[in-house]
Amino acid sequence: MFDPDQLRTFLAVSETLNFTRAAARLGLSQPTVSQHVRKLEDAAGRRLLDRDTRGVQLTDDGQAMASFARTILAAHDEATRYFTGSAMHGRLRFGAADDLALAQLPRVLRDFRRLHPRINLELTVAQSGALHRRLRAGQLDLVFIKEATGQAEGQLVRRDRLVWVALPGTPVDAEAPVPLITYQGTSLTRQAAVAALTEAGRPWRITCKTVEVNGVLAALRAGIGIAVLPQSLIPDDLVQLPAGLGLPELGDVDITLVANPQSPREPIEALTGAILGTSAR
Image (cartoon, rainbow, N blue to C red; front, side, top):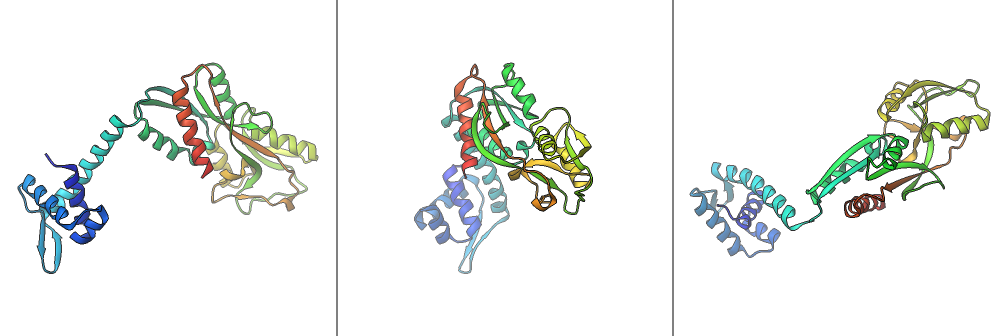
Protein backbone atom coordinates (compact mmCIF):
# COMPACT_ATOMS: atom_id res chain seq x y z
CA MET A 1 0.00 0.00 0.00
CA PHE A 2 2.80 2.42 0.88
CA ASP A 3 5.71 2.95 -1.48
CA PRO A 4 9.12 2.45 0.22
CA ASP A 5 10.67 5.42 -1.61
CA GLN A 6 7.86 7.67 -0.43
CA LEU A 7 8.25 6.37 3.12
CA ARG A 8 11.99 7.07 3.08
CA THR A 9 11.38 10.58 1.79
CA PHE A 10 8.73 11.20 4.44
CA LEU A 11 11.08 9.99 7.20
CA ALA A 12 13.80 12.36 5.98
CA VAL A 13 11.33 15.26 6.13
CA SER A 14 10.05 14.18 9.55
CA GLU A 15 13.61 14.06 10.92
CA THR A 16 14.82 17.35 9.39
CA LEU A 17 11.46 19.23 9.41
CA ASN A 18 12.75 20.88 6.25
CA PHE A 19 12.09 19.92 2.62
CA THR A 20 15.35 21.44 1.38
CA ARG A 21 17.50 19.56 3.90
CA ALA A 22 15.56 16.33 3.27
CA ALA A 23 16.17 16.70 -0.47
CA ALA A 24 19.89 17.21 0.10
CA ARG A 25 20.08 14.18 2.40
CA LEU A 26 18.36 11.95 -0.16
CA GLY A 27 20.00 13.39 -3.28
CA LEU A 28 16.62 14.38 -4.70
CA SER A 29 15.17 17.62 -5.96
CA GLN A 30 12.84 19.54 -3.65
CA PRO A 31 9.87 19.14 -6.04
CA THR A 32 10.41 15.35 -5.96
CA VAL A 33 10.39 15.38 -2.16
CA SER A 34 7.16 17.37 -2.16
CA GLN A 35 5.64 14.96 -4.68
CA HIS A 36 6.57 11.90 -2.59
CA VAL A 37 5.02 13.39 0.53
CA ARG A 38 1.86 14.39 -1.33
CA LYS A 39 1.46 10.91 -2.81
CA LEU A 40 1.97 9.32 0.60
CA GLU A 41 -0.69 11.58 2.09
CA ASP A 42 -3.02 10.59 -0.76
CA ALA A 43 -2.35 6.89 -0.11
CA ALA A 44 -2.96 7.33 3.62
CA GLY A 45 -5.98 9.56 3.16
CA ARG A 46 -4.64 11.78 5.96
CA ARG A 47 -2.65 14.98 6.27
CA LEU A 48 0.76 14.05 7.61
CA LEU A 49 2.47 17.45 7.72
CA ASP A 50 1.47 20.96 8.63
CA ARG A 51 3.33 23.44 6.47
CA ASP A 52 3.41 27.21 6.86
CA THR A 53 5.84 30.08 6.56
CA ARG A 54 7.43 29.20 9.90
CA GLY A 55 8.33 25.62 8.92
CA VAL A 56 7.10 22.04 8.93
CA GLN A 57 5.50 20.07 11.75
CA LEU A 58 4.19 16.51 11.95
CA THR A 59 0.50 16.05 12.54
CA ASP A 60 -0.66 13.33 14.92
CA ASP A 61 -1.19 11.10 11.88
CA GLY A 62 2.29 12.10 10.71
CA GLN A 63 3.79 10.94 14.02
CA ALA A 64 2.01 7.61 13.59
CA MET A 65 3.16 7.31 9.97
CA ALA A 66 6.79 7.96 10.96
CA SER A 67 6.64 5.06 13.44
CA PHE A 68 4.99 2.76 10.90
CA ALA A 69 7.46 3.83 8.20
CA ARG A 70 10.44 2.76 10.28
CA THR A 71 8.90 -0.65 10.89
CA ILE A 72 7.86 -1.11 7.26
CA LEU A 73 11.26 -0.09 5.89
CA ALA A 74 13.13 -2.33 8.32
CA ALA A 75 11.04 -5.31 7.20
CA HIS A 76 11.44 -4.29 3.55
CA ASP A 77 15.23 -4.06 3.86
CA GLU A 78 15.41 -7.38 5.69
CA ALA A 79 13.36 -9.08 2.97
CA THR A 80 15.56 -7.51 0.28
CA ARG A 81 18.71 -8.80 1.97
CA TYR A 82 17.15 -12.26 2.32
CA PHE A 83 16.06 -12.68 -1.30
CA THR A 84 18.85 -10.82 -3.07
CA GLY A 85 21.74 -11.60 -0.73
CA SER A 86 23.64 -14.75 0.00
CA ALA A 87 22.19 -17.99 -1.29
CA MET A 88 24.17 -20.01 1.24
CA HIS A 89 22.09 -22.31 3.37
CA GLY A 90 22.52 -25.26 5.67
CA ARG A 91 23.91 -25.76 9.16
CA LEU A 92 27.14 -24.45 10.65
CA ARG A 93 28.16 -25.90 14.02
CA PHE A 94 30.52 -23.30 15.48
CA GLY A 95 32.45 -23.55 18.74
CA ALA A 96 34.12 -20.65 20.55
CA ALA A 97 36.36 -20.59 23.60
CA ASP A 98 34.46 -18.95 26.44
CA ASP A 99 36.88 -16.05 26.94
CA LEU A 100 36.98 -15.31 23.20
CA ALA A 101 33.17 -15.33 23.11
CA LEU A 102 33.09 -12.36 25.49
CA ALA A 103 34.93 -9.96 23.20
CA GLN A 104 34.14 -9.01 19.57
CA LEU A 105 32.50 -12.30 18.69
CA PRO A 106 28.85 -11.42 19.53
CA ARG A 107 28.83 -8.57 17.02
CA VAL A 108 30.54 -10.71 14.38
CA LEU A 109 27.95 -13.47 14.78
CA ARG A 110 25.06 -10.99 14.76
CA ASP A 111 26.30 -9.48 11.48
CA PHE A 112 26.94 -12.95 10.03
CA ARG A 113 23.38 -14.09 10.77
CA ARG A 114 22.00 -10.94 9.18
CA LEU A 115 24.08 -11.42 6.02
CA HIS A 116 23.43 -15.18 5.80
CA PRO A 117 19.92 -15.76 7.18
CA ARG A 118 19.59 -19.18 5.51
CA ILE A 119 22.49 -20.64 7.49
CA ASN A 120 21.40 -22.30 10.71
CA LEU A 121 24.22 -21.25 13.03
CA GLU A 122 24.62 -23.44 16.13
CA LEU A 123 26.98 -21.99 18.76
CA THR A 124 28.83 -24.01 21.41
CA VAL A 125 30.85 -22.19 24.07
CA ALA A 126 33.39 -24.17 26.09
CA GLN A 127 37.11 -24.42 26.82
CA SER A 128 39.47 -24.67 23.86
CA GLY A 129 40.54 -28.27 24.54
CA ALA A 130 36.97 -29.55 24.76
CA LEU A 131 36.04 -27.78 21.53
CA HIS A 132 39.06 -29.19 19.72
CA ARG A 133 38.10 -32.72 20.79
CA ARG A 134 34.53 -32.22 19.58
CA LEU A 135 35.82 -30.95 16.24
CA ARG A 136 37.98 -34.06 15.81
CA ALA A 137 34.97 -36.22 16.67
CA GLY A 138 32.99 -34.59 13.85
CA GLN A 139 30.58 -32.81 16.21
CA LEU A 140 31.61 -29.28 15.17
CA ASP A 141 32.43 -27.66 11.83
CA LEU A 142 34.60 -24.74 12.94
CA VAL A 143 36.15 -23.73 16.27
CA PHE A 144 37.63 -20.43 17.48
CA ILE A 145 40.17 -21.40 20.13
CA LYS A 146 43.49 -20.75 21.81
CA GLU A 147 46.46 -22.96 20.89
CA ALA A 148 50.05 -23.11 22.06
CA THR A 149 52.32 -20.90 19.96
CA GLY A 150 54.19 -22.92 17.35
CA GLN A 151 51.86 -25.90 17.77
CA ALA A 152 48.75 -24.35 16.25
CA GLU A 153 46.80 -26.59 13.92
CA GLY A 154 44.39 -23.96 12.66
CA GLN A 155 44.49 -20.68 10.78
CA LEU A 156 46.06 -17.93 12.86
CA VAL A 157 43.71 -15.07 13.69
CA ARG A 158 46.15 -13.25 15.95
CA ARG A 159 48.98 -13.90 18.39
CA ASP A 160 48.42 -12.60 21.90
CA ARG A 161 50.49 -12.25 25.04
CA LEU A 162 49.63 -14.27 28.14
CA VAL A 163 49.79 -12.09 31.24
CA TRP A 164 49.08 -12.18 34.95
CA VAL A 165 45.82 -10.40 35.83
CA ALA A 166 44.21 -9.32 39.10
CA LEU A 167 41.84 -6.86 40.70
CA PRO A 168 43.73 -3.65 41.60
CA GLY A 169 45.06 -3.97 45.13
CA THR A 170 45.11 -7.77 45.24
CA PRO A 171 48.11 -8.71 47.42
CA VAL A 172 50.87 -10.78 45.82
CA ASP A 173 53.54 -11.49 48.42
CA ALA A 174 56.93 -12.40 46.96
CA GLU A 175 57.58 -14.62 49.99
CA ALA A 176 54.21 -16.44 49.91
CA PRO A 177 52.76 -18.97 47.45
CA VAL A 178 51.13 -17.34 44.45
CA PRO A 179 47.31 -17.44 44.88
CA LEU A 180 46.20 -18.94 41.58
CA ILE A 181 42.72 -18.80 40.01
CA THR A 182 42.41 -21.31 37.21
CA TYR A 183 40.22 -23.67 35.26
CA GLN A 184 39.58 -27.19 36.45
CA GLY A 185 41.53 -29.92 34.70
CA THR A 186 43.87 -29.16 31.84
CA SER A 187 43.72 -25.82 30.08
CA LEU A 188 46.28 -23.85 28.13
CA THR A 189 46.36 -20.97 30.62
CA ARG A 190 46.59 -23.31 33.63
CA GLN A 191 49.43 -25.24 32.01
CA ALA A 192 51.25 -22.00 31.18
CA ALA A 193 50.87 -20.67 34.74
CA VAL A 194 51.99 -23.87 36.47
CA ALA A 195 54.92 -24.46 34.08
CA ALA A 196 56.18 -20.88 34.43
CA LEU A 197 55.90 -20.84 38.23
CA THR A 198 57.54 -24.24 38.56
CA GLU A 199 60.43 -23.26 36.30
CA ALA A 200 60.91 -20.04 38.26
CA GLY A 201 60.86 -21.93 41.56
CA ARG A 202 57.88 -19.92 42.77
CA PRO A 203 55.50 -21.83 45.07
CA TRP A 204 51.81 -21.56 44.26
CA ARG A 205 48.43 -22.61 45.59
CA ILE A 206 45.06 -22.77 43.88
CA THR A 207 42.50 -20.49 45.51
CA CYS A 208 39.72 -21.14 42.96
CA LYS A 209 39.00 -23.78 40.33
CA THR A 210 36.21 -23.13 37.84
CA VAL A 211 34.85 -24.58 34.61
CA GLU A 212 34.30 -21.32 32.72
CA VAL A 213 35.73 -17.85 32.26
CA ASN A 214 32.89 -16.18 34.17
CA GLY A 215 34.01 -18.10 37.25
CA VAL A 216 37.59 -16.93 36.74
CA LEU A 217 36.44 -13.32 36.40
CA ALA A 218 34.18 -13.56 39.46
CA ALA A 219 37.05 -14.90 41.58
CA LEU A 220 39.39 -12.18 40.26
CA ARG A 221 36.85 -9.49 41.11
CA ALA A 222 36.52 -10.95 44.59
CA GLY A 223 40.26 -10.39 45.02
CA ILE A 224 41.03 -13.97 46.07
CA GLY A 225 43.90 -14.50 43.68
CA ILE A 226 45.44 -13.87 40.28
CA ALA A 227 44.91 -15.57 36.92
CA VAL A 228 46.37 -15.84 33.44
CA LEU A 229 44.53 -14.22 30.51
CA PRO A 230 45.41 -13.18 26.97
CA GLN A 231 46.43 -9.52 27.14
CA SER A 232 43.75 -8.36 24.70
CA LEU A 233 40.96 -9.92 26.77
CA ILE A 234 41.59 -8.14 30.09
CA PRO A 235 38.31 -6.52 31.29
CA ASP A 236 38.42 -2.82 32.08
CA ASP A 237 38.05 -3.32 35.83
CA LEU A 238 41.05 -5.68 36.07
CA VAL A 239 44.74 -4.97 35.52
CA GLN A 240 47.85 -6.64 34.19
CA LEU A 241 50.30 -7.19 37.04
CA PRO A 242 53.67 -5.44 36.68
CA ALA A 243 56.96 -7.25 36.26
CA GLY A 244 58.17 -5.84 39.57
CA LEU A 245 56.19 -8.46 41.48
CA GLY A 246 58.61 -11.14 40.36
CA LEU A 247 56.07 -13.21 38.47
CA PRO A 248 57.55 -15.20 35.57
CA GLU A 249 56.97 -14.43 31.91
CA LEU A 250 54.27 -16.59 30.34
CA GLY A 251 54.92 -16.29 26.61
CA ASP A 252 52.40 -15.98 23.80
CA VAL A 253 49.26 -17.80 22.73
CA ASP A 254 47.87 -18.30 19.23
CA ILE A 255 44.20 -17.57 18.69
CA THR A 256 43.12 -19.69 15.76
CA LEU A 257 40.25 -20.99 13.66
CA VAL A 258 40.29 -24.74 13.08
CA ALA A 259 37.92 -26.22 10.50
CA ASN A 260 36.56 -29.71 10.11
CA PRO A 261 37.81 -30.90 6.68
CA GLN A 262 34.70 -33.04 6.25
CA SER A 263 32.27 -30.11 6.67
CA PRO A 264 30.82 -27.95 3.84
CA ARG A 265 33.39 -25.31 2.93
CA GLU A 266 31.26 -22.33 1.90
CA PRO A 267 29.69 -21.51 5.32
CA ILE A 268 33.02 -22.13 7.06
CA GLU A 269 34.85 -19.79 4.70
CA ALA A 270 32.18 -17.11 5.11
CA LEU A 271 32.41 -17.10 8.92
CA THR A 272 36.21 -17.40 8.81
CA GLY A 273 36.35 -14.32 6.58
CA ALA A 274 34.06 -12.38 8.94
CA ILE A 275 36.21 -13.18 11.99
CA LEU A 276 39.51 -12.49 10.20
CA GLY A 277 38.15 -9.20 8.85
CA THR A 278 37.08 -8.04 12.29
CA SER A 279 40.42 -9.01 13.82
CA ALA A 280 42.28 -7.00 11.20
CA ARG A 281 40.43 -3.76 12.07
